[in-house]
Amino acid sequence: MIVISHVASVNIEIKDLDCLKRACVALGLGFREGQRTHKWYGRWMNDYDAADAAYLHGIKPEDYGKCAHAIAVPHNASAYEAGVVQRADGKGYSLIYDFYGNKGRALEALIGKGASKLKQQYAVEVARKAARKQGYRVQEKKEQDGKVRLICTR
Amino acid sequence: MSEQIIITIDDEANATVEVKGHVGKGCNKLTEQIEKALGETTKEVKTSEYYQTAKATQTAQR
Image (cartoon, rainbow over all chains, first blue to last red; front, top):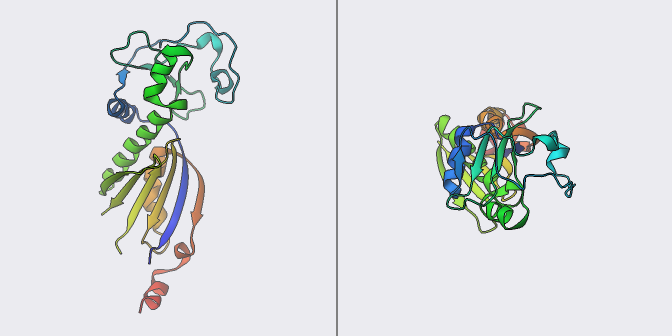
């Protein structure tokens, strides 16, 4: 009989830069620590207003391209870069990037749509680190539907 | 069955943290640090097993 006593849902917040760096390594991305600008189109065209548009999340168009650190596509100097931007609401960092055109698609291929692949890998690194810190042994399983399952025992 | 924590992260970075095999109130202590490290807990479901005390389960397991 399997007893499940507690199930919690968590919204991922990017707070641990060490885990973000490890996630980049795992996905073949380059973490450019301290790089204060990241490559994007360069001019705000006001052509995107979906719910995840950066200007709807506290980032002013005149600040587009500025960041605390950048994430690059290695061996592709023309591809756009993602910016790691400190959030004003204290919830860690946001990942900001321009997905337009070939340069944007080259970046999105590695970080995933909406940076989902990078966020997933980041969460895996954070969860593994936290579980190990509590003395758990962690077994990682990649499921066919794209989910990653960490089974922690001690 | 030994106690397990199962952390599932889907390809849209939605995360769930489950405790299996533990009965009683101690289980949220186990996952609190993990949930905090991940971010903001938005939903928590405590199953009936959560509310049983250790004594009650000993009787049930005879």
